[in-house]
Length: 233
Length: 233
DNA sequence: CGGCTGCTTGAATAGAGTCAATAAACGTGG
DNA sequence: CCACGTTTATTGACTCTATTCAAGCAGCCG
Image (tube, rainbow over all chains, first blue to last red; front, side):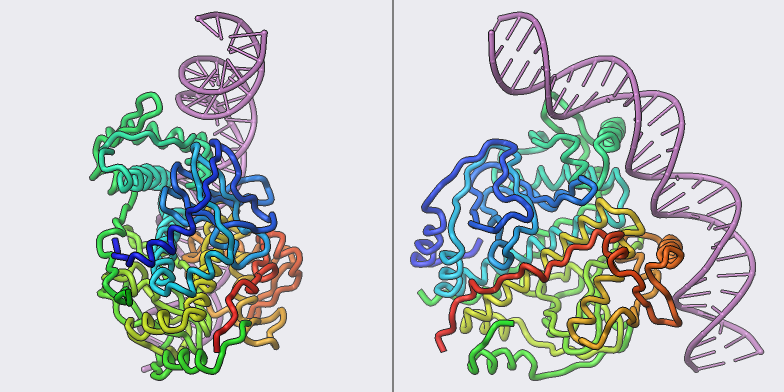
C-alpha cells in the first residue's frame, strides 16, 4: 500500500528470518507471564483476549496474516493480554532489540508502524462502541462482516461464503454475550434471511441488510497515507 | 519518564508553539468532518467519542494534559471520532507535516509515540473488557477510579477526594449504561460505603473494596521503558 | 422569577443470562 | 473403520439486570 525502498524491504525481512508453527488452541503469549518475543503473523488466524477474575473472557481482536503481534511486550514486563492461535498458524518471532533497531534506523518503517497502530485503534474503538451501545444481534452481525472482510482482503476469491472458524463460544467472548445467546442471534439472522449456515460455512445472503443490522462502518474507505514522508533511498 | 536530549526537547517544543482555548462543551473535531490538525492537550480534560445511528453516544477515552489528540487525522480523510472539551481547556494545535517531520528526524520521539500508542491501546482494551464482561456497578466504579488516578498523576495533592467533572449522562456514555442506571449504581456504591458524594466532589471511602468491585488492574506497575534506544546526542 | 439542565426515584418492560437437557459433529485410539 | 468420549450446537423455561417511561425536585443562570 506504500512503496518501500529496497533497503527498507531488506530491513523488514530481518523480522521474518525465523519461523514457528502453532496448532489451533496453542498459546503464543499468556497474560501476566513475563513478556518475550514479538511476532509477525504469516499464516492463519489468532486472537488476543483477556481473562477476568470471574473466569470470563473478552476477545479483544482477531489477527490475520501481516499483523504485528505482542507489540505491548515492548513496554510491559508482564503481558497485558493472551494471544492464542485460532487455526494452525505460522509466525515469525523476533526480539525486542531487533524491532527497536528497525524503528531507529528506518524512520519510514516506524511511521508505518504508527499507521498500523492507528488502524488497530479505530478497530478497537469500533468494537468498543458496539459493546457499549448496540444490541446482541448487531454485535453478532458485526463479527460476521468483520471476519469476512478481513479474510477477503487476503484472498480476493472469497465472496459471500466463507469458513468462519469460530465457535459460538468464541463469538460470544468477542461480543460480550453468552454462547447460548449467540446461537439465538444467529438463528434470528438466519430466519430473517440475512445469512445461511452450511456445515461449517457461513453465507451472507443479504449483505446490505446485515451491514445495516450491524451498524457497520467501512473504515478502509477514507484511509489516506499520502502524508507518509518520501523515502530517502 | 525517559531522558530526552536537548535537541529532542527543542524538536518537541515545536509542537507547542501555538495555543488555543476551548470552553467546556466545545468541539475540537467532529466525526466525519474532514480531518485537520493534531493537538497536544496542555490543560483541561477532553473526551473522544463516537455517535451511533440511533443517536446514542459511546465515549471512547478521556484525555488529560500531555495527551496527543486526533492522531488518526494522520491517516483518515474523515475523522473517525468526535473530540469534545469536558472542561475549559488549552491545546496546542499543529499540522500533519510538522508531526511527520518530527517522526522522521527524531526516531526516539517516534519510539515514544509508539509507547504512547501502546499504553492507550491497553487502556482501550481494559474498557472493552469492562463493557463486554463486567456488571454495571463494576463499570461505574472503574470510571471513578480511572478518573481519580489520572488526575492524581498530574496533581499529587489529590487524594481520595476529587471533582469528577462528569455528568451521570457522560458516565453512562462511557460505560454503556443509561444515566438512570448510573444514578442507581452510584447510590448503591454510596450505600455500601465505598464512596461519598458531596456537592460536585466525589470521595473514595474504601478504595480496596472499590477497586475489587471494579475489577481494577493497575497498568502502570510493570511498565518497562528500558528498551528505548540510547540517544545519539 | 422562569426556564434549563442534571439528579433522583418508582413502576413496568425488555433483553440477555442461567440452567438444563438433548442432539450433532469431531477426534482419537483401538 | 468403528466406538467412545468430548466438544459444540440447539432449544425451552425461568430469572435477573438494565432500560424505558414518567414524574418530581434541586440548582443555576440569564
